[in-house]
Image (cartoon, rainbow, N blue to C red):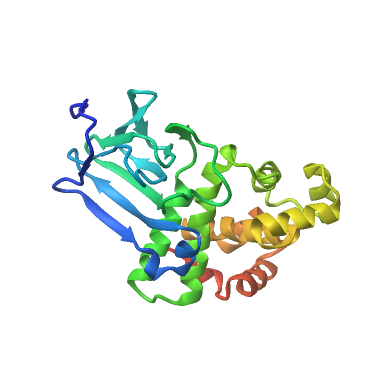
Length: 277
């Protein structure tokens, strides 16, 4: 393990041997619309080290997710291990720091000044949380590959929406959203035949009130949001190599044909377009 540095002056050191795969919002309008300043994947060497001190407009809010390897992050004034399955969530305007041990693979979303995902985040201090890192890894690589190859606008939009939504999901426990608990329940069982009445009952709202709140928070109706969540999960599963039949069942469709038809209607492309190389 590399040396744990105690110097907390402003540092931005990528290091020799680090490979960055950057995703710029000018190549993906959806990221720009959601106030994402930059995103990417870093295969970090042991020299990789960042310290973000408090100064006007800085630091910006960020989500950093470890895919593989091991690093350390500053939490409550102490360095703690950040390993595969950990997300380091750092709010804007607060000192934070992180550094790699050898072979640290991370993905990250950096937000514009004054923003941190959809709605208002209630994160007050840097925190380390556990999660499944695979969906964000697949989405970042999918978006990076599309930018590097075809740059088809519809595909860029869909990959961008998935990246943004996964960032929002990580931030959900700190949101002021009235519906995040509802969507977490839906995400836990996307194969269920959800109805508007059932969603309303789970949310504790009437059907019309649920519709108004949902449109205000997500821009779409409750059932359209269910479809969006299903398709986001479907893209993650397809890009991870799952067969269409298995994906269809996992996200609530009777058969592969019905799923493929809905997928193309929603995303403007067949499932095969999201298959990893």
